[in-house]
Image (tube, rainbow, N blue to C red; front, top):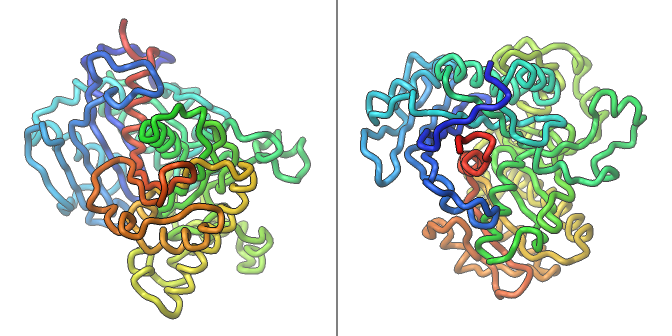
Length: 437
């Protein structure tokens, strides 16, 4: 594994890697010559060179996409079937081969690899992967069995394929370290809770960090002056109350399964439900494809992979659900809106009604005109008003942040195109620990 500190030449490239349970998203950046050290002015910290996505990894054939930035040269491809990809390691190897062959970029130019790691426990800052930090993340796999295992397999592949680059872990839990103790704790014996790390950690932190910076720049206000309610709505969905630029509360808890329902997650339930659902809840699942290098109980498989919209409608595609206005599809849509409104109302009270903006992000938050309409129809009583015309034109606006509300003073309604890979790359470029003087 790497050393505690790895300073690299400023001319080196930054690779940002985001591992899903069956996918791998990769972005390659170069560091700007003199990135601004100001957290409020980081728009030019890095320059995107290319992006790549490999999905269907666990259900071959995998599909490979590769897109170059406008100024780069090379061949692009879209959803090309790749038979040789069978796991995250072979997916990463395929990307590196393609990088050299079609974009003429040598892997030796990559000096840092930023990895999105869902659960960091009490790690609050990015860490270079060493034997110690690797095993710490490994131990946390019990709390994120469908995520940390996959991330670890990619980290292994990166270290093997890029031995001279440092692998740096960026944790989704870090953004939520500011949640007050009484909000983060569960009403259980605290000696047991402390010993076993049982508390609310929160997730999607890299997305929330990006959104906070982007909204701050859009409103031309310092992050510390902002109170926001942010909705990161995608296959995995969560919300966050941001008070004075810091996380006050978030819907996910000890694990990502709590809070809002998602494509295959149940969201908040009575914790006893699982024992009534199946008497096999505590047994290890026999489906080893559900996790990488960790064991998954029957309960975790049900709550994480056999629930959510898939269980209600038979599809994980929210676009299909919102197109149907009857039967189980309408019920699933209404259920999702109901859960969002419950947290929205609670967060509005926690922020004392002083909310500068309601921000929609994530694949659904950014693309679903109908969902934004349904939420804002109910939220109008709190002073958030939607502009139907602007709401319908979001897809045609390439801005990072788009106004879709009526009125310009207070209680704004915004859509933000979040980018976790860009957030990691920016943080890496601005971190003096990782660069030569």
